Length: 371
Image (cartoon, rainbow, N blue to C red; front, side):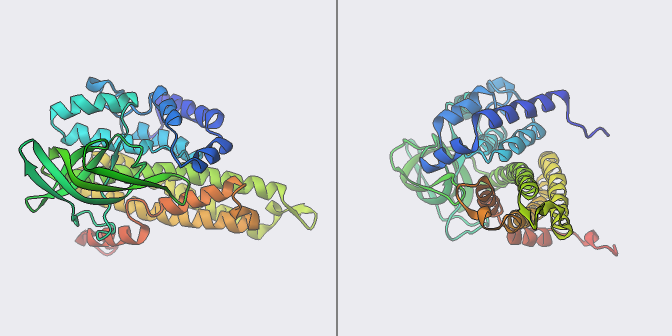
């Protein structure tokens, strides 16, 4: 089998890398974080590059590319720890294309592709922690359709989004709805997060909504798995740049008249960081390639990937700070922002401990080494 990237994927990687290097430098990122964590002009630049259309089907104005293309893109965005949540466009495109009625697809997918509409997943609730089957938000039937009542937390760029994918209880079963932010009964309270990005609390008080599917739990699991694969790819890029910053610093920082990169003990720690990066990269590839598998196999694979990525993110981030010393946690230095990004990514879509439990729960009888 040929595991090399295609020429088109290599060109995509180079195009995104050029934009990150030239158009989204560290100072621009800092200014966006200081201004709230989301910049519509940067989002429009991603759309102009065709990235918001990347995974939207061609029938709806997209490029019709797959999970590997999305992975390549997000790795490069992770190198610049880009704050604008492109992963949410990939989640929305996949869920709408797979689960939504044709009329909803025609209405929203072309707007996602053009970058006109930012549609984000709003699924987290205070009582649920990382469990997807726990939901308190309720839907009731109305003459016009459905109305939603409840609250969601940590919605990515929630007060900047144009619409939300919202799982709610309908007749005692989880269904998935689309809610427009400007609809009556919708309220958002935005705030910055630890890594400089933006999130919001979402309140729904009789908000009108469009039913996407009554098989909401399956659709939500798909959305979260796409999100996990996206998080893994983005984290690989962030870890790669964290390692590069660390090595560069060690080659410049001198102690006893020589660069600290010459110290054998520190070189061993850098080697361990590189090993964790390559383990994470392999599992990120695994995660993206498994997105097309049946749900049970897909869910197992994505949890496995998130366990390894979580371990790698924590190790590389902490080692980077320790090898830098005090400068590694100063706001003026890029390394501290990568550390914060990796720390937050480790908790996205379920932290390492949660997914370790998921892997254990889904382990089959033949999984043991003596089977």
